[in-house]
Image 1: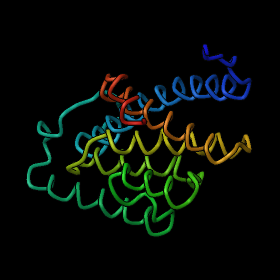
Image 2 (image 1 turned 180 degrees about the horizontal axis):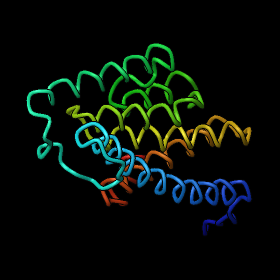
Image 3 (image 1 turned 180 degrees about the vertical axis):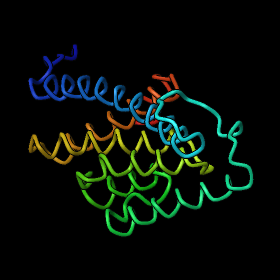
Length: 183
C-alpha cells in the first residue's frame, strides 16, 4: 500500500518563517557583538571611540595594561551580581539547561545582558571568545520571541535552537555545522 504524504501544517510553515526572520536578526546581533567587542577594546586599551577590531597587544599602557582585565572583570561581576546570575558561564551549557529544566524559557534580560557583559569581558582582555555568548544570545532571542508569541513548549524549543544555530552560523561562518548542533 503506497504511503500518503500529508501537506505541511500551517503552524509548521509559520514557525519556520519566524525562525528564518530570527536567523537574520541574530546575524545582525552577531555583527553588533563583534563591533561592541572592538569598541570596548579600543576604549580600554587605546582610549578612543572606534568599532575597529584591534589587538590589545599594541597598547601604550605599559604595566598598567594588567589592570584593564581586572576592571573588566569587576564590571562583569557587578552585572552578574545585580543584573542576572544567568550571564555567568560560557553560554552554551546555560542555554541547554534552560531547554531541559525551564521549558526553553530564558529571561528576557539575558538577551542584552549576555552580549554586553561578554563584550566587556572580551574587550578588556578576558580569555574568551564571542562564540558561546552569541550562541546563548541567539537562543535567548529565540526564546524571547517564542514567549511573546505564546507558542507551545516544543515550538519555543525550536525557536531557541534556531536562534542558537543562527548565532553559531554567523560567528563561525558554518551554517551546516550550526544546524547539526541545533539538531
